[in-house]
Image (tube, rainbow, N blue to C red; front, top):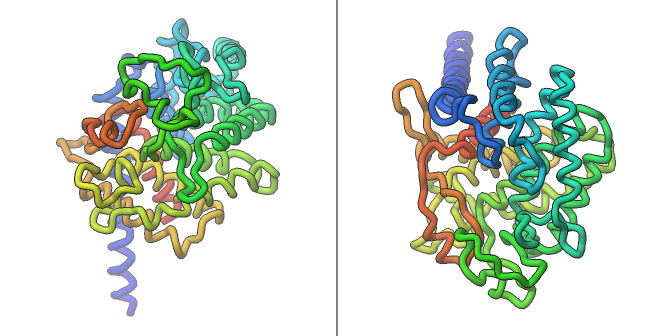
Length: 377
């Protein structure tokens, strides 16, 4: 019996070491190859990987934090003149300034974080008060929720001022009212509010004319992944006894309710368009898989989601990403099957989006999921 226990212990320990080595390989690839801090640009994909550096900083013992603090400081110092909050994709990187304001107390970061929030308050709004994803036209996208959540939640952690949580919850509910589908629990990608068919060279032309409500008709995987991650981060931030926690918990349950059934049984991943698993043109997509799995893992940790139902789901996703959506290149572990940057269109538009490897937002999502999965294990 003692020998059996020892063997099982060694197997478990080996698994933990392997998982930690995967995190380290992704981390080093992101910081050294794909996006060194000296190449940081003030934008949303960069902000997502930067957020994983904050997560790594928070997870490491004191002796190992410096490398992540130095990375964040270098990225923020080099983009100090570019830093702004004039639209959600710009607001996203602001979490780095808020984090440094909290950690260092440096007036430069405090001033810049406050300026980004002041900018954010002047961004275009819909008639219902929703933040427009763009400045050139007024549209609400599900992406917006995660982009503003990174900054607003970090400002709350820095200041303790609930106005930032109030704003996040308000925006979430306004967006949900327009984008959420009651049957699936998932959100469509976006809606138009000003009847302006803006040509952005990314969206399918006239996408807003697909419905009388001038909104998109498809549930895009990564778009919903952004929402799931924002809810999970909110649950990980607000006090568990607060009224905010109860609302965010309810919303996470709603948006994830059909994800177990939609998970591909063979690969453990979710599809580019999750509700069409049997359509030939559809494909399993890695960034939404990591995002869904991250949010579900936090939900289990916080006892919001059923461990019995959802633990097998994230175990399949973890294994699926390793077996189907990573590439080992020497010491580097690289995400693959990552849908490129995507705007709004019809079903064929999403099926036609190309996949890439690496990609900052995928690296960030993988790292954040792996970190939380290891905590749960």
